[in-house]
Length: 337
Image (cartoon, rainbow, N blue to C red; front, side, top):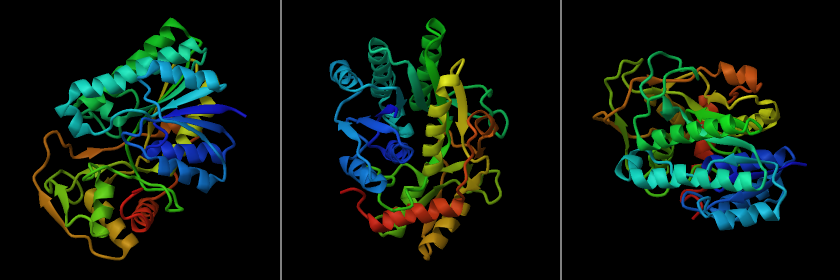
């Protein structure tokens, strides 16, 4: 039975991936500094899966503490989620983002090398593409990130490629994902943003549950079916399954493999809103305000490479995403508090 180290495993995508790993028979060790994560999420992951995991409150930038974790377990591979994740905030505090997200990864890779562990799945982002030349976006598209967050993701991708170039025994998979939404169907774990949400769907559910007054829709004059921006939303469970598929494909990776994680089916903000109104059986107040700087009309993935290379495809619908996100929010109006 393989043991997988999951960095950032107490966060949104990390916790769902831990649940999926446990369900598929892996042993799981989590390191997380809890800046975006919750110990309660990990308790609930164990409750859902009826399996136990091991948790260390450790920052990946702390080489000494991280090394102790590797010494205490026979780790087979790493799934690396740990990092700061707010795109807007990254423009205000770029040095912090480079220090945490790039510096933390370098620390992790050094400790992995010290312990002879050379298999890693990296949680990257579609933000590395920046403004797309053509749609849908393929993995071969030009990369030109528009934020320090996206830039840091791209830097880590470059570091991983260089590590492999220097030592081809490294097995590396890079997953660029689009817009993760939804929650575990049990309603026990889900997205738990600190403060006012940056992302659309937790904002919608917090309006629906009465925590926020009104959804602000940024821009109603885009070149789309209804004037609101269109994005590729992917259910977090599909995404978690994609990480496990990437893990099983790692031994066969000849070069660092890059895969888009999306549905290939874009939805507009108004379509997402309608799906949530159906899920929570109420109207959700919204107002259209000005566009944000850098916002683009349409953005979606070509997921064909992952379908062939990983034998993975997103299966859940926008309706599933809305129903599961609402169940989580309705049962946990204050998140894990």
